[in-house]
Length: 373
Image (tube, rainbow, N blue to C red):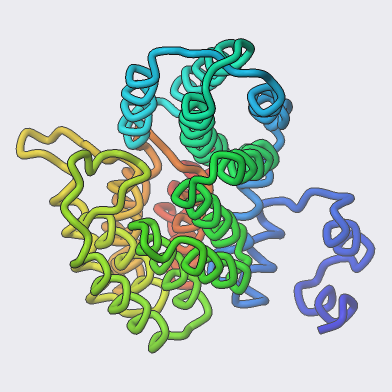
Protein backbone atom coordinates (compact mmCIF):
# COMPACT_ATOMS: atom_id res chain seq x y z
CA UNK A 1 0.00 0.00 0.00
CA UNK A 2 1.45 3.36 -0.98
CA UNK A 3 1.59 6.19 1.53
CA UNK A 4 -0.60 8.31 -0.74
CA UNK A 5 -3.20 5.58 -0.97
CA UNK A 6 -3.11 4.97 2.77
CA UNK A 7 -3.41 8.71 3.55
CA UNK A 8 -6.44 8.95 1.26
CA UNK A 9 -8.08 5.89 2.85
CA UNK A 10 -7.93 7.32 6.38
CA UNK A 11 -8.40 10.98 5.33
CA UNK A 12 -5.08 12.24 6.75
CA UNK A 13 -2.46 14.51 5.23
CA UNK A 14 0.26 12.53 3.45
CA UNK A 15 3.04 14.87 4.63
CA UNK A 16 2.02 14.46 8.26
CA UNK A 17 1.83 10.68 7.93
CA UNK A 18 5.28 10.68 6.33
CA UNK A 19 6.68 12.47 9.40
CA UNK A 20 5.01 9.94 11.70
CA UNK A 21 6.36 7.07 9.63
CA UNK A 22 9.91 8.46 9.83
CA UNK A 23 9.71 9.19 13.55
CA UNK A 24 9.72 12.98 13.13
CA UNK A 25 6.25 13.42 14.62
CA UNK A 26 4.59 11.44 17.40
CA UNK A 27 1.24 9.88 16.47
CA UNK A 28 -1.80 10.89 18.45
CA UNK A 29 -3.89 8.24 20.14
CA UNK A 30 -6.70 8.85 17.63
CA UNK A 31 -4.36 8.42 14.66
CA UNK A 32 -2.97 5.20 16.14
CA UNK A 33 -6.50 3.84 16.50
CA UNK A 34 -7.50 4.85 12.96
CA UNK A 35 -4.36 3.29 11.47
CA UNK A 36 -4.84 0.19 13.58
CA UNK A 37 -8.37 -0.26 12.23
CA UNK A 38 -7.34 0.44 8.63
CA UNK A 39 -4.47 -2.06 8.75
CA UNK A 40 -6.20 -4.71 10.86
CA UNK A 41 -3.43 -4.56 13.47
CA UNK A 42 -5.68 -5.84 16.29
CA UNK A 43 -4.55 -3.27 18.85
CA UNK A 44 -0.82 -3.38 18.16
CA UNK A 45 -0.62 0.25 17.03
CA UNK A 46 -2.83 1.46 19.88
CA UNK A 47 -0.56 -0.26 22.41
CA UNK A 48 2.58 0.95 20.62
CA UNK A 49 1.44 4.58 20.87
CA UNK A 50 1.00 4.21 24.64
CA UNK A 51 4.39 2.49 24.94
CA UNK A 52 6.12 5.29 23.02
CA UNK A 53 4.83 7.72 25.61
CA UNK A 54 6.18 5.55 28.43
CA UNK A 55 9.56 5.22 26.70
CA UNK A 56 10.10 8.98 26.90
CA UNK A 57 10.95 8.46 30.60
CA UNK A 58 14.05 6.48 29.64
CA UNK A 59 16.45 9.30 30.48
CA UNK A 60 19.38 7.18 31.76
CA UNK A 61 19.57 4.18 29.45
CA UNK A 62 23.15 3.28 30.36
CA UNK A 63 22.79 3.39 34.15
CA UNK A 64 22.80 -0.38 34.71
CA UNK A 65 25.22 -1.28 31.92
CA UNK A 66 27.81 1.10 33.36
CA UNK A 67 27.71 -0.91 36.59
CA UNK A 68 28.06 -4.15 34.65
CA UNK A 69 30.98 -2.73 32.67
CA UNK A 70 32.78 -2.02 35.94
CA UNK A 71 32.17 -5.58 37.10
CA UNK A 72 33.67 -6.97 33.91
CA UNK A 73 36.72 -4.66 34.09
CA UNK A 74 37.89 -5.11 37.69
CA UNK A 75 39.94 -7.59 39.68
CA UNK A 76 38.17 -9.85 42.19
CA UNK A 77 38.07 -10.40 45.93
CA UNK A 78 36.40 -12.83 48.31
CA UNK A 79 32.97 -12.23 49.85
CA UNK A 80 30.20 -14.23 51.46
CA UNK A 81 29.07 -15.87 48.24
CA UNK A 82 26.34 -17.96 49.81
CA UNK A 83 24.75 -14.87 51.36
CA UNK A 84 24.97 -13.05 48.04
CA UNK A 85 23.34 -15.94 46.21
CA UNK A 86 20.53 -16.04 48.78
CA UNK A 87 19.98 -12.31 48.36
CA UNK A 88 19.80 -12.61 44.57
CA UNK A 89 17.27 -15.44 44.92
CA UNK A 90 15.20 -13.34 47.31
CA UNK A 91 15.11 -10.40 44.90
CA UNK A 92 14.11 -12.64 41.98
CA UNK A 93 11.28 -14.07 44.11
CA UNK A 94 9.99 -10.55 44.82
CA UNK A 95 9.61 -9.76 41.12
CA UNK A 96 5.93 -10.76 40.80
CA UNK A 97 4.57 -8.31 43.36
CA UNK A 98 7.11 -5.70 44.46
CA UNK A 99 7.22 -2.16 43.05
CA UNK A 100 9.34 -2.35 39.90
CA UNK A 101 11.31 0.88 40.45
CA UNK A 102 12.06 0.04 44.05
CA UNK A 103 13.15 -3.51 43.27
CA UNK A 104 15.33 -2.38 40.36
CA UNK A 105 17.00 0.17 42.64
CA UNK A 106 17.86 -2.47 45.23
CA UNK A 107 19.15 -4.86 42.56
CA UNK A 108 21.41 -2.10 41.20
CA UNK A 109 22.69 -1.49 44.74
CA UNK A 110 23.79 -5.13 44.89
CA UNK A 111 25.45 -4.78 41.51
CA UNK A 112 27.43 -1.87 42.99
CA UNK A 113 28.35 -4.08 45.93
CA UNK A 114 29.63 -6.81 43.58
CA UNK A 115 31.59 -4.21 41.62
CA UNK A 116 33.29 -3.10 44.84
CA UNK A 117 34.08 -6.68 45.87
CA UNK A 118 35.57 -7.39 42.47
CA UNK A 119 38.21 -4.69 42.97
CA UNK A 120 40.24 -7.08 45.13
CA UNK A 121 41.90 -10.31 43.97
CA UNK A 122 40.41 -13.74 44.65
CA UNK A 123 40.33 -17.22 43.16
CA UNK A 124 38.99 -18.10 39.75
CA UNK A 125 36.02 -20.03 41.17
CA UNK A 126 34.96 -17.09 43.38
CA UNK A 127 35.35 -14.72 40.46
CA UNK A 128 33.08 -16.89 38.33
CA UNK A 129 30.46 -17.14 41.08
CA UNK A 130 30.41 -13.36 41.41
CA UNK A 131 29.91 -13.01 37.67
CA UNK A 132 27.02 -15.48 37.86
CA UNK A 133 25.34 -13.47 40.64
CA UNK A 134 25.84 -10.31 38.58
CA UNK A 135 24.35 -12.09 35.59
CA UNK A 136 21.16 -13.02 37.43
CA UNK A 137 20.86 -9.49 38.80
CA UNK A 138 21.32 -8.07 35.30
CA UNK A 139 18.54 -10.30 33.99
CA UNK A 140 16.28 -9.13 36.81
CA UNK A 141 17.06 -5.44 36.29
CA UNK A 142 16.57 -5.78 32.53
CA UNK A 143 13.12 -7.29 33.05
CA UNK A 144 12.16 -4.57 35.52
CA UNK A 145 13.40 -1.83 33.20
CA UNK A 146 11.30 -3.27 30.41
CA UNK A 147 8.26 -3.53 32.72
CA UNK A 148 8.66 0.19 33.34
CA UNK A 149 8.70 0.91 29.60
CA UNK A 150 12.42 1.77 29.51
CA UNK A 151 13.14 -0.08 26.28
CA UNK A 152 16.63 1.28 25.59
CA UNK A 153 17.83 0.59 29.12
CA UNK A 154 16.35 -2.89 29.12
CA UNK A 155 17.97 -3.89 25.83
CA UNK A 156 21.37 -2.54 26.92
CA UNK A 157 21.11 -4.45 30.22
CA UNK A 158 20.06 -7.65 28.42
CA UNK A 159 23.08 -7.38 26.12
CA UNK A 160 25.38 -6.88 29.12
CA UNK A 161 23.83 -9.91 30.85
CA UNK A 162 24.60 -11.98 27.76
CA UNK A 163 28.23 -10.87 27.89
CA UNK A 164 28.43 -11.83 31.58
CA UNK A 165 26.92 -15.23 30.76
CA UNK A 166 29.64 -15.80 28.16
CA UNK A 167 32.39 -14.74 30.58
CA UNK A 168 31.02 -16.94 33.37
CA UNK A 169 30.37 -19.79 30.92
CA UNK A 170 26.80 -20.02 32.28
CA UNK A 171 24.48 -21.56 29.70
CA UNK A 172 21.24 -21.00 31.68
CA UNK A 173 21.74 -17.24 32.05
CA UNK A 174 22.69 -17.09 28.38
CA UNK A 175 19.46 -18.87 27.43
CA UNK A 176 17.42 -16.45 29.52
CA UNK A 177 18.86 -13.56 27.51
CA UNK A 178 17.28 -15.15 24.43
CA UNK A 179 13.99 -15.45 26.31
CA UNK A 180 14.18 -11.74 27.07
CA UNK A 181 14.91 -10.98 23.40
CA UNK A 182 11.88 -12.97 22.33
CA UNK A 183 9.69 -11.21 24.91
CA UNK A 184 10.94 -7.80 23.82
CA UNK A 185 10.26 -8.67 20.17
CA UNK A 186 6.79 -10.01 21.00
CA UNK A 187 5.67 -6.88 22.83
CA UNK A 188 7.17 -4.71 20.08
CA UNK A 189 5.03 -6.60 17.52
CA UNK A 190 8.04 -8.16 15.77
CA UNK A 191 6.48 -11.59 15.72
CA UNK A 192 8.83 -13.30 13.28
CA UNK A 193 11.79 -11.99 15.29
CA UNK A 194 10.10 -13.46 18.38
CA UNK A 195 10.09 -16.89 16.76
CA UNK A 196 13.70 -16.54 15.58
CA UNK A 197 14.96 -15.57 19.06
CA UNK A 198 12.84 -18.22 20.79
CA UNK A 199 14.12 -21.00 18.54
CA UNK A 200 17.72 -19.77 18.84
CA UNK A 201 17.39 -19.90 22.63
CA UNK A 202 16.01 -23.44 22.46
CA UNK A 203 19.14 -24.50 20.60
CA UNK A 204 21.44 -22.75 23.11
CA UNK A 205 19.97 -24.26 26.28
CA UNK A 206 17.87 -27.31 25.41
CA UNK A 207 18.41 -28.93 28.82
CA UNK A 208 17.28 -25.97 30.94
CA UNK A 209 13.66 -25.36 32.03
CA UNK A 210 13.74 -21.93 30.39
CA UNK A 211 13.33 -23.74 27.05
CA UNK A 212 9.68 -24.27 28.02
CA UNK A 213 9.21 -20.53 28.35
CA UNK A 214 10.89 -19.98 24.99
CA UNK A 215 8.41 -22.39 23.41
CA UNK A 216 5.62 -20.40 25.06
CA UNK A 217 6.88 -17.15 23.52
CA UNK A 218 7.01 -18.92 20.17
CA UNK A 219 3.38 -20.02 20.64
CA UNK A 220 2.31 -16.47 21.47
CA UNK A 221 3.90 -15.14 18.29
CA UNK A 222 2.33 -17.89 16.20
CA UNK A 223 -1.07 -16.95 17.63
CA UNK A 224 -0.58 -13.37 16.50
CA UNK A 225 0.36 -14.66 13.04
CA UNK A 226 -2.95 -16.59 12.94
CA UNK A 227 -1.15 -19.95 12.89
CA UNK A 228 -3.59 -21.89 15.09
CA UNK A 229 -2.08 -25.26 14.20
CA UNK A 230 1.38 -23.93 15.08
CA UNK A 231 0.08 -22.65 18.41
CA UNK A 232 -1.34 -26.02 19.36
CA UNK A 233 1.80 -27.88 18.26
CA UNK A 234 4.08 -25.53 20.23
CA UNK A 235 1.91 -25.68 23.36
CA UNK A 236 1.74 -29.47 23.21
CA UNK A 237 5.53 -29.65 22.83
CA UNK A 238 6.07 -27.29 25.75
CA UNK A 239 3.60 -29.12 27.97
CA UNK A 240 5.34 -32.44 27.30
CA UNK A 241 8.69 -30.94 28.28
CA UNK A 242 7.21 -29.32 31.39
CA UNK A 243 5.94 -32.67 32.65
CA UNK A 244 9.53 -33.93 32.80
CA UNK A 245 10.78 -30.96 34.84
CA UNK A 246 10.82 -31.44 38.65
CA UNK A 247 8.49 -29.27 40.69
CA UNK A 248 10.47 -26.13 41.65
CA UNK A 249 11.21 -25.32 45.29
CA UNK A 250 10.60 -21.61 44.71
CA UNK A 251 7.91 -21.31 41.99
CA UNK A 252 7.62 -17.58 42.69
CA UNK A 253 11.20 -17.09 41.42
CA UNK A 254 10.97 -15.09 38.20
CA UNK A 255 13.53 -17.27 36.42
CA UNK A 256 11.79 -20.54 37.23
CA UNK A 257 9.19 -22.21 35.02
CA UNK A 258 6.31 -23.97 36.75
CA UNK A 259 2.94 -25.42 35.61
CA UNK A 260 0.94 -22.36 36.67
CA UNK A 261 3.12 -20.11 34.52
CA UNK A 262 2.47 -22.40 31.57
CA UNK A 263 -1.30 -21.90 31.94
CA UNK A 264 -0.66 -18.15 31.79
CA UNK A 265 1.18 -18.51 28.48
CA UNK A 266 -1.45 -20.84 27.02
CA UNK A 267 -4.15 -18.30 27.92
CA UNK A 268 -2.43 -15.60 25.90
CA UNK A 269 -1.71 -17.82 22.90
CA UNK A 270 -5.26 -19.14 22.64
CA UNK A 271 -6.77 -15.67 23.01
CA UNK A 272 -4.76 -14.42 20.06
CA UNK A 273 -5.50 -17.57 18.07
CA UNK A 274 -9.21 -16.78 18.51
CA UNK A 275 -10.07 -19.80 20.66
CA UNK A 276 -12.17 -17.91 23.19
CA UNK A 277 -13.32 -20.99 25.10
CA UNK A 278 -9.80 -22.19 25.86
CA UNK A 279 -8.59 -18.64 26.52
CA UNK A 280 -11.36 -18.09 29.08
CA UNK A 281 -10.74 -21.50 30.66
CA UNK A 282 -7.03 -20.82 31.13
CA UNK A 283 -7.73 -17.29 32.37
CA UNK A 284 -9.93 -18.72 35.10
CA UNK A 285 -7.18 -21.17 36.08
CA UNK A 286 -4.64 -18.33 36.21
CA UNK A 287 -6.88 -16.35 38.54
CA UNK A 288 -7.50 -19.39 40.76
CA UNK A 289 -3.75 -19.99 41.04
CA UNK A 290 -2.91 -16.35 41.68
CA UNK A 291 -5.49 -15.32 44.28
CA UNK A 292 -5.60 -16.83 47.76
CA UNK A 293 -8.78 -17.88 49.54
CA UNK A 294 -8.59 -14.71 51.62
CA UNK A 295 -8.39 -12.56 48.46
CA UNK A 296 -4.64 -11.95 48.61
CA UNK A 297 -3.22 -11.43 45.12
CA UNK A 298 0.10 -13.27 44.78
CA UNK A 299 0.78 -12.51 41.10
CA UNK A 300 -0.69 -9.09 40.20
CA UNK A 301 0.68 -9.03 36.64
CA UNK A 302 -0.74 -12.44 35.77
CA UNK A 303 -4.05 -11.45 37.35
CA UNK A 304 -4.22 -8.26 35.28
CA UNK A 305 -3.63 -10.07 31.98
CA UNK A 306 -6.09 -12.82 32.93
CA UNK A 307 -8.78 -10.21 33.58
CA UNK A 308 -7.96 -8.48 30.30
CA UNK A 309 -8.29 -11.84 28.56
CA UNK A 310 -11.70 -12.30 30.14
CA UNK A 311 -12.56 -8.77 29.05
CA UNK A 312 -11.55 -9.45 25.43
CA UNK A 313 -13.67 -12.61 25.39
CA UNK A 314 -16.61 -10.72 26.91
CA UNK A 315 -16.30 -7.95 24.30
CA UNK A 316 -16.28 -10.53 21.51
CA UNK A 317 -19.45 -12.00 22.98
CA UNK A 318 -21.17 -8.59 23.10
CA UNK A 319 -20.96 -8.10 26.87
CA UNK A 320 -19.95 -4.43 27.03
CA UNK A 321 -20.40 -3.75 30.74
CA UNK A 322 -18.57 -6.90 31.80
CA UNK A 323 -15.75 -6.26 29.33
CA UNK A 324 -15.13 -2.68 30.43
CA UNK A 325 -15.46 -3.50 34.13
CA UNK A 326 -12.90 -6.29 33.88
CA UNK A 327 -10.64 -4.18 31.68
CA UNK A 328 -10.66 -1.19 34.02
CA UNK A 329 -10.02 -3.44 37.03
CA UNK A 330 -7.02 -4.96 35.26
CA UNK A 331 -5.47 -1.57 34.52
CA UNK A 332 -5.74 -0.59 38.19
CA UNK A 333 -3.43 -3.35 39.43
CA UNK A 334 -0.59 -2.52 41.86
CA UNK A 335 2.23 -4.11 39.80
CA UNK A 336 2.43 -3.72 36.04
CA UNK A 337 4.52 -4.91 33.13
CA UNK A 338 3.70 -2.06 30.79
CA UNK A 339 4.61 -3.72 27.46
CA UNK A 340 2.65 -6.90 28.15
CA UNK A 341 -0.26 -5.10 29.80
CA UNK A 342 -0.62 -2.56 27.02
CA UNK A 343 -0.38 -5.24 24.35
CA UNK A 344 -3.47 -7.02 25.71
CA UNK A 345 -5.22 -3.75 26.59
CA UNK A 346 -4.73 -2.66 22.99
CA UNK A 347 -6.56 -5.78 21.85
CA UNK A 348 -9.46 -4.91 24.15
CA UNK A 349 -9.48 -1.31 22.91
CA UNK A 350 -9.87 -2.54 19.33
CA UNK A 351 -12.62 -5.01 20.22
CA UNK A 352 -14.55 -2.26 22.02
CA UNK A 353 -14.03 0.18 19.15
CA UNK A 354 -15.27 -2.38 16.64
CA UNK A 355 -18.42 -3.31 18.54
CA UNK A 356 -19.23 -0.37 20.82
CA UNK A 357 -17.50 2.71 19.34
CA UNK A 358 -19.82 5.38 20.76
CA UNK A 359 -20.68 3.91 24.14
CA UNK A 360 -19.75 5.84 27.31
CA UNK A 361 -18.27 2.67 28.81
CA UNK A 362 -15.81 2.45 25.91
CA UNK A 363 -14.74 6.04 26.51
CA UNK A 364 -14.31 5.34 30.23
CA UNK A 365 -12.02 2.39 29.49
CA UNK A 366 -9.91 4.56 27.19
CA UNK A 367 -9.64 7.22 29.88
CA UNK A 368 -8.36 4.56 32.28
CA UNK A 369 -5.89 3.31 29.64
CA UNK A 370 -4.44 6.80 29.20
CA UNK A 371 -3.60 6.91 32.90
CA UNK A 372 -1.52 3.71 32.83
CA UNK A 373 2.17 4.46 33.41
